[in-house]
Image (cartoon, rainbow, N blue to C red; front, side, top):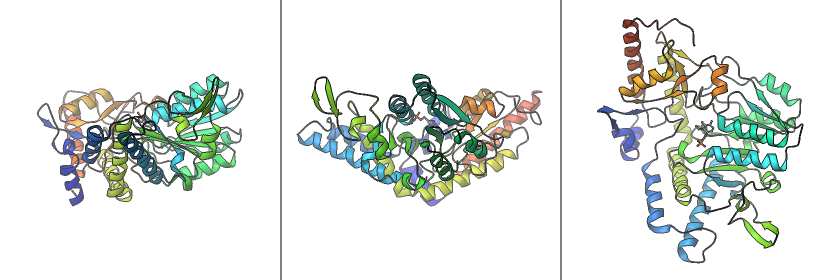
Length: 420
Ligand code: PLP
């Protein structure tokens, strides 16, 4: 274990260091689902409720002014974190899912016409698929999918062919939440823009990876959730290029986004407030800011380098265990690795590992299409973060070896069978 890691486990993530469940030490390896909040995040949220709690943008009294200033500070932090040209391009939401639904609804209302085309990919989380399906069905547009290769990469040749049909938008994840595939976003954005398509990036799994800034990446929209970067649940953002946000009508309306009204004529606030109807999740936004400061202080380069080394180690170790089949073999993996142990059910494997203290996800991880494409009905997913260690991966590998040996002894034909 690195010195910095021993320190942060003890000081900042007591849950990772000390959690026990049914008498076993918990090894938490479900970070693609949610990461543990760091202590500074928890303190910041507590401090918000103890000292600052008041509604924003409305009061002229001190606490409201402070709460407004704190929220706008976080907006500035997010803008710097993602490399946006201005904090006005950052809209607070409850998380990636709401950001994408918001964007898809706005596109359906302001951009898409019958006969238009939208592209998504077979690799997407349902949160980056279903909102577009719904937007297309509402507007009469068509949704087409960029295929995934057997290795678990996006088929860029096929993307090129689909782009010839001049889609209005391409929705694509930066990192797959199942395979960990890191998509070549710059190249993809260049291809899409050359064809006149806007690019919306689902960066839910990518923000610890040190994605290039949105300006240099050239994407038009980007969404992510605070709880994937050691922040609180219920807080996230939608980034949109200024020209886009100014053009799109707000899909949600209500208090806090009206600048003037001469009934029934309504003028909205400028961006980003025109997209933030209602009272925002102020404690969540405060915690979001603390999470960004925490990640920045640790350094995304260091985090990324270390997490990539963990995933590589896991891939090497698990692929050496006869009977384990790892899904895909993308050139670059980050954050997640999924596998099957045929003919055992993924659910049963995760349950047996859970009895030994391992917190892993089983199922389709909200990526039904991708599982179908990879020819499996479900998988077990391991997703380490920077507070995990090689030793924890080693403990998991040893537990899997024990599980396979026990299955063999019981007459289950594990090893050497095809995925199913
Ligand atoms: N997109 C991807 C790639 C994800 O991994 C997830 C969550 O796991 C989401 C979207 C949805 O994020 P949230 O549940 O925070 O809205």
